Length: 115
Image (cartoon, rainbow, N blue to C red):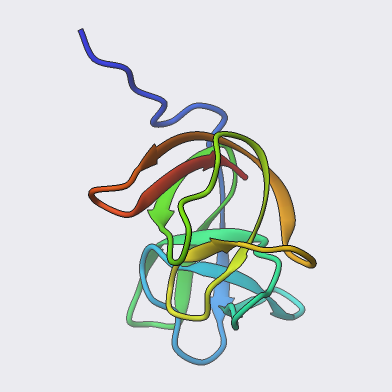
């Protein structure tokens, strides 16, 4: 038996994109109904789980999500996470937002947390 958190509390919305938004990357609001890729240290409002060529993205704004991390591996439990500016997240001392980290895979450099 394996443990899975995929789909737990998942909440997604369709948003317009501004600039380049990559699938699987943290996003932030850029204008009314629009998201853009996060810059280094930004607080993420969601993760682009799908990006269409027509300028729209499916953005997960709630529930369990897994993304790449950079720097020191986040600790499980509540942790301050911010965007790393390269399509992933990192632990931050200030800024960012507090998220419940449930799973850390140091070999794959991924972190699973609740948005």
